[in-house]
Image (cartoon, rainbow, N blue to C red; front, side, top):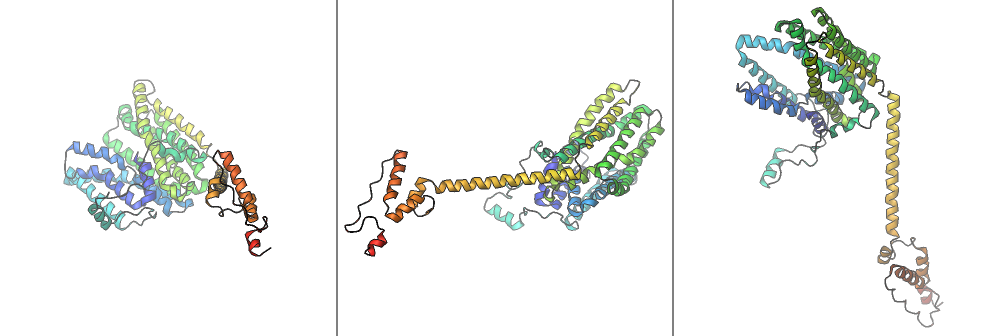
Length: 459
């Protein structure tokens, strides 16, 4: 998935550049329909658009850069509330435009909105993360073309991407690894409900298209209220962990109500619990943001969205099969009961997330371990230097470089050099090489045991 990759790239290149690319890439399929009605072109563009599906990852990383930790959960909720607003306004607006001006006008409007969005990112949105790698200027690109060099040096970018390695930020860390498991279980249930609910309501209660439209609009309003208002008060009051559990419990109750519903009124009543289920993701994102460094925000938010993306294929596939199995039984909604059981398991996982104090102790112990390892490496490097100083070949090549390394040789030098030769002869014998010639005898009348300075002095 693109989420972890673009998250890591935005840590290096800045948020604005990556946001501009992802917005352009994800809106391209709809924008192309403003110029062509060929669905083959749309299908290819839609497949390629999946490579850029990281806009919310970068949005959450941007919020983490600009907002204080204690205020991030409400900010995340506000960002998600805009998604609910778009689900409420978008279909209605598109329907009105299509009725008044035709279907083509809908896609032309989408193209204009995409251009306005990209222009806003370029000219208005401030950069929140100073790039550590500068993009090449136009002059640099021209020079590279003239000199037949690569246009852009990609060696310093994190492009060697393995989808499994993107999850490394969640392994080995007691907090983030548990958050990853909760995210996986929660979104397995979410995508299972989202992908099958409309079909279930049509086959079970014979909902019309208009009725389903009203229901979706109601869910959108619940999302706006939950993520735009409730999260601003519940996370500061209860904390991320407790808010997460409340949201998971609300979603479990919602699944049970839908699974056991005998009347449409039960489906409408379940919307109340959707108010709480929409608290989970802002609380998760806030917890991850508070637990990672500024340099890891993009990668961490990308990784949690990568875990979420895994469930987009797994959840609908598994629950689609379950719906097919139970469709003709006395309990056609039983797959939603299974979904509720998965959410209960996720609630249990939240109790394995360490407290802030426990996590702080883990971080301190990890830092101390890294410090001890660096100290040990420093000692090893020092030992290597000493070993080099004691190397006989180095001593012979540079006889005055380490006067204190072989004190017996230094004494011998001061005494006239005889002992030095003896020591070196011993070394040579031990190494199997022929010994050097003995030193010349002292000059006549020189007193034999004196130093050269003493000889000159006439002593």
